[in-house]
Image (cartoon, rainbow, N blue to C red; front, side):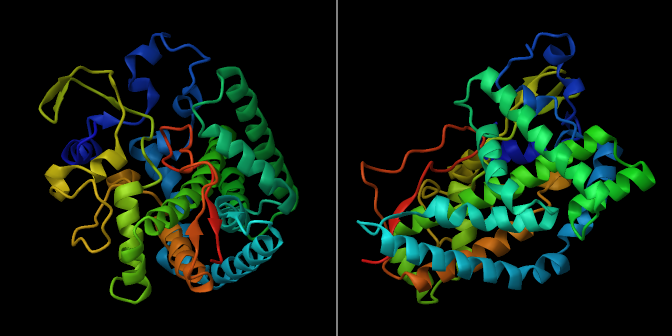
Length: 366
């Protein structure tokens, strides 16, 4: 499903479910264990639950992402942003050509630090976590390598749980463990699976939102000037980035729980559905003839990048906060910043789940 109306209809229809047991081919053993997307199907986290199971898991973590709690993170986010900008400044000064990979030096460590602090991930484990999560989203990785990577990711999070169980902290991992051990609300598998979801989605998507926003604004300098001068808000620029180049392109998978009509098409029970969020954002039926253009001045910057309904992204507020503090400070510190590809345009990531760039080489100073 790629049109805006079709995606909205699918998200709202209770006959479209997330539990893999509704997928006929999977239920009868037609999907091999080395299928490249198997880890996205067999997961046992909130993303793959329906009804009361989904409500139960969502309730356990929703308190960590209330607007009030997210807002309390703002000073820490600002401090992280400023430290990273200092690092970018030093790195550019030490570089022979003044070029820095902004993704590696800024867009990656910001959400990784925020989500690492939120879940109590040790400093030494954070680079390893990013490497594993990045590969988890990469459809260019061979199936056997993907299995090994996922096994390593599971092991890392298992050790995190063991560590926090032995020495609890003021973090969300400890809170989930408490729910598991005291209330028996989470199975051990659900505990690890939900850590996979929150930690991976919590930094991969925000990282690429920042990268995509910088790339879009650099290629539309008149719009960047308008935002920097206050003619258009940074919030509007971020929402337009989410509409036009949101980091979540497709998110496997949903299934038809019964025979149904969807967007005028008959779908039998047990079929998988793949919803195109970024394509929905560029639908001319929804956004008019300029839907395929990045334009921070457009009136309607609504989008589906954080999904809608019962599976609306819990971390949406945190992602917006990080982008809102990162982008204006980046361009204030480096008003002449330009993307500086050495061999053409930056390559897109080899992922259809995430819409982003492999690198973002920039020259912070003219």
